Image 1: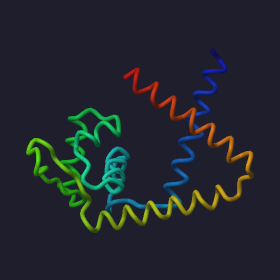
Image 2: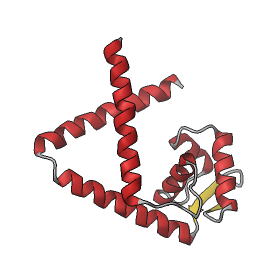
Image 3: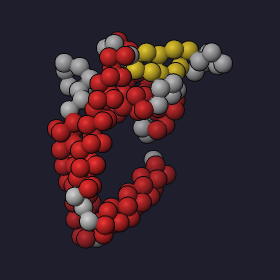
Image 4: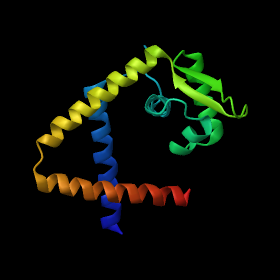
Length: 149
């Protein structure tokens, strides 16, 4: 049990530091005030998948539907997100970023990718293979956490 507890702590520490460092390098705040991470994650998702529904976004981000709806409402009020009614099903809200927010999202995504590509290029083949295996394990852990929810 102690090994698992230490591994869990190590996982939190390493992933947290990785995300913070990547944010520092890439920047990409969506406004003058720092937004909550859940709102930034929603905006990044919509930037990658314009037209995603509110429900799909909630599922993808593992958010309760009412939490996703609150984030969407705030993002619309902040001028970052546009919510439209799906022409085929008026009960479905479709999301896209405003043009200024899309430019910020694209710039931030490009900076993160460039930073990661530069670091990945500095790893040897064995380290990259370890990373691929580790990503498969993290993906499985994510699915297990979703099942436990």
